[in-house]
Length: 308
Image (cartoon, rainbow, N blue to C red; front, side):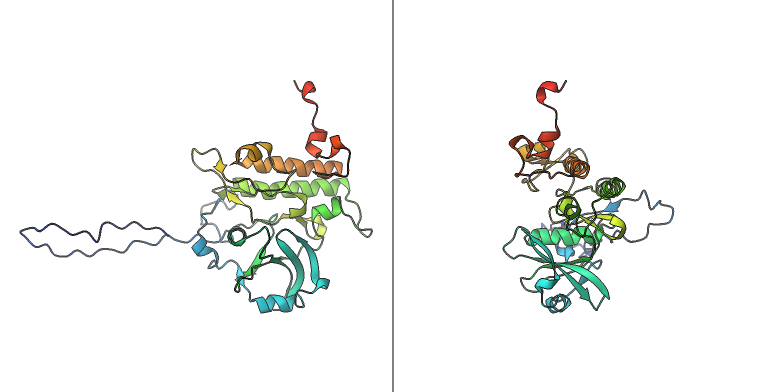
């Protein structure tokens, strides 16, 4: 934490009368931000209370909201990261199903690829965000491992996989999602996004909302996951946050992609794309379709000549 000290090292000019040395009080330490799960103070409404988020890298790995696991513990939980325990993989690394004796719980363990897309900074961001953010529609981070150059994240296990699995890659044993279930999932994802935008202070821009990041629990209860790209939103008079363009093609808001100016509306655009996928059953980007149908938003949008 940055502290400003008055010029203690400056030499004072010589004066006729000697002054008694004054005691200099040490600067007060800035209090760490408590986890969002802490109870609201008396007299305040827990539903309207905003969570305070101010990320400081030096406090991320000392935050008590997430447990610390050793690499040996996680290797044992996944039978030494056996292929039989593999749930999926992507540009960030691989996700395994495991059982941790220390918490008596089935978990999902994400082992980050040291040469992958998600680096140390994204790891720190995800640990911080999910340690401070708690909501029924946000995935729960149980803990993490930072042994040597190993970086692993431990989440609650979501037994029904991702929304993408059910919409676009259903296995023969999976039932197609009915209309009511689709709308329930859409509503739950919207509640999670609303919490990030309206109930945290400063607001959090998710920046990676897509079907593969919406995980489903029992009863198809949806939770947003993968917060490595999350960014604190604008505060005060600021209208946007300038940053390099990150996200997934097909879900990224065009104004953000062109200018690098990130706003809460960037997430709203991504949510709109997810909603179109839920309604139509089509992918956001599908190169196997005809030229005019590969981009879902472009395909669904009316021609410019028809726009008033």
